[in-house]
Image (cartoon, rainbow, N blue to C red; front, side):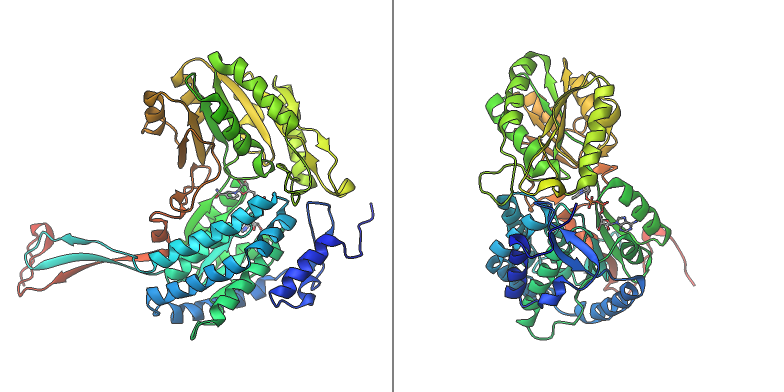
Amino acid sequence: MNKPEAPTSLSRDVAAFFAELGLPAESLSQGSTEIRSPINGEIIARVRFADAAEAKAAIGRSAEAFRQWRVVPAPVRGELIRQLGNELRAAKEGLGRLVTIETGKILSEGLGEVQEMIDICDFAVGLSRQLYGLTMVSERADHRLMEQWHPLGPTGVITAFNFPVAVWSWNAALALVCGNPVIWKPSEKTPLTAMATTALFRRAAARLDNIPADLVTLLIGGRDVGEVLVDDPRVALVSATGSTGMGRIVGERLARRFGRAILELGGNNAAILCPSADLDLALRATAFSAIGTAGQRCTSLRRIIVHGSVYDSFVPRLKKVYDTVTIGNPIDGSTLVGPLIDKRSYEAMQKALEAAAQAGGKVHGGKRVKGPGGDDAYYVSPALVEMPAQTGPVLNETFAPILYVLRYENFDEALALHNGVPQGLSSAIFTTDLRESERFLSASGSDCGLANVNMGSSGAEIGGAFGGEKETGGGRESGSDAWKAYMRRVTSAINFGHALPLAQGVKFDI
Ligand code: NAD
């Protein structure tokens, strides 16, 4: 079908925000790759993709920026991130709206994503006065052991479409205070939010003196450009967020050159609903985690494991929520579920639902519904699938709002189902029984990187380290001590005496 060529309200919104940021109007019509809003399928820009030669040249400039930036005192580096946080505060409305236009997530989530960027900036400013190492006692007389954390080198940040700017900020705010320049390869589906964020970064940098050029480089392009970052030994660390399929390739290629990796990959997150659970609370938490963001969060709830004693009171209530949730234009304040990102995503959802039905699943919902944009936008009612067993599509992450419901009778069985998938990102338990919640959080409980009690699997705060195990990739970013992955640890032994005792009592007298 023909696409509207004349500027409509979404492209006008985008152009107005770009003008506010001082970005030239031509930046929205520079190339041949069409960027469409999932809200109505409208073309909102045509961008140019970088090629491998440009990517290599950018890495060279980033390596030069590293030589300058690594010797700037960390608290001075933190001042740049303070300025970035201020720019984000001022632009929160516009950038949040652009996130919604480019990804289709509801406006409050678009704004929440920018708030998350502001939060990590605050965190990183504080961190810039810490970056602490330990001192350790030595076994040798008149000796001291200590460690320092030094900048690592240019950091490649490859991001996914669903958190087009927050994931960049989790990485970039830490990398920059740690002394590393950043080269950003955003999702090919969401270059506009990346362009806007980079413009805000440049504004922040312009407020200060002596900020090296090319401290943050934006490379808009496809996986070929990402692969240049992955293969180039000048890129000391690659933090890659996306599907497990992408991570398998990136992880192997990085390992081949001993490059450092932070892999943040797919999840298949589950919650266990126990007999003692507060069902009202569990209902709201389940709805937000499973339906929110149209099931397009890495932490979206994909499986709920329900005890037989509460199954018949809980599942029908959940179905009612599925039937009544507001689906539509994500800019409209009353909408809770926006569109899927594109047609491929819709088709993957339908394929998973067919496979689930073939495996004996009872499918509720999951049908295409009409949105504001005619045939070029993909809105669906969220799907709830009651499964007889954890088989087939239940073992995979389908990046769409599908919640598989499984029944259990004893807690060990629930834990075995919970952990019985290849992914290990986020997890939750609903219970008021201390023994169950503590067991869930213990070494023999959830095998995920994130484990929540009486809340859903999604909606993490920046203060904790974020990431997951198994096929989720093992990386950690954001809060706690995740910053250590962005630095080089140096352990030093210092002899302040006159003798030279050797460790472990070794004798070597000459
Ligand atoms: P995707 O894997 O299709 O793409 C992610 C990024 O990787 C894009 O920038 C893409 O261009 C790049 N890429 C793809 N192949 C590459 C290669 N061989 N070398 C280098 N770069 C390559 O993912 P998507 O569809 O954009 O995002 C959805 C996926 O991301 C889901 O699986 C979701 O769970 C995951 N995700 C994970 C987290 C997390 O923190 N664990 C956060 C957000 C999204």
